[in-house]
Length: 121
Ligand code: FAD
Image (cartoon, rainbow, N blue to C red):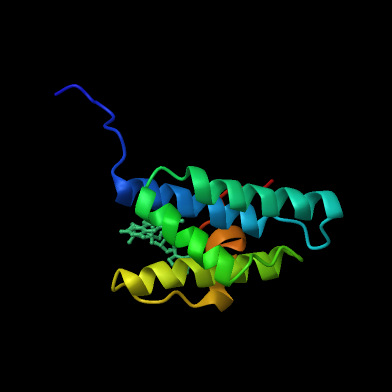
């Protein structure tokens, strides 16, 4: 059977998009400039209008309105995104992720080095 890539469904799109968003937050600067902060705010706002899952995007816009993204540094942005993702997890009946492990999951990998092949700048 020939290999064929199918268009993503909302689950696959969600998984891939969370990977991108959490990685972006983990690699955000510790001391962002005014320009970097403004870019991140603009990006998240625009993203919440263009994400190609209508209901998901609408929920995200409501969430952003109630809890504006904290773009002060990588840790705060990562925590904000982790809480945002957890709200979706809860709505879908999935367990909450432990937000103290967000850098281990998305940037540093576990201490035993099993993920040392992962992206480094
Ligand atoms: P995902 O939830 O995709 O998570 C991928 C990986 O991220 C997990 O394996 C885990 O290692 C890690 N992770 C999990 N939680 C966190 C966290 N809180 N912080 C950091 N890392 C974490 N689907 C809907 O049906 N309805 C919606 O309204 C909806 N809204 C969405 C909004 C956005 C912005 C996005 C990007 C996706 C949305 N989705 C929605 C898709 C949904 O969140 C999942 O991506 C999809 O159900 C696949 O889930 P999954 O179990 O593979 O893991």
